[in-house]
Image (cartoon, rainbow, N blue to C red; front, side, top):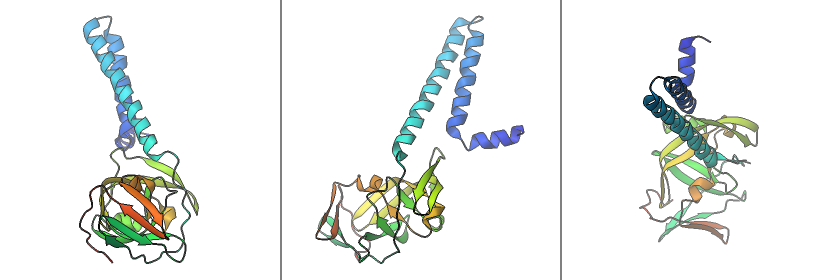
Length: 216
């Protein structure tokens, strides 16, 4: 691998690039300690802080995606949720699942609500249509789906709306193994004031209810 290829690889791996820079600064600080102890000690300290930052960022990133969603996807349905007062109510479909119609960065799509999924998951076609951007750390994860284990790219959703619920800056994964399906995971549901199931109806209660763009 030549120098340009290495540079391109590091550009796509910001944590690795930060770790390499921190190690280089620490080594330089160690070499300079005999000549200029003050400057050498300072550089060593900066390098060590950089390594600690890499470790904390890695732990934070892993914590957000640990457990990997395991998805079992039925056929797409056509859910019809309603907004009543502070609640968005989603009736159960005949397939035994809850489906919602949501807008993702302004793009309307159907989503399966899966309480067994750690993260919200988006199909590649929906991700392209909604112009989803890669996560700031440009990370990917291995995700288990009904079609096997696939590599999923972490992305950030600027805005997702369903009924009177609005979620912004929401983590999600884009996985080819999902086909055309989209999934609402626990990382969105956990943002709500509450959610529950009553009489085969999923009831979503946001902290700050928004005006619903589409109640049907």
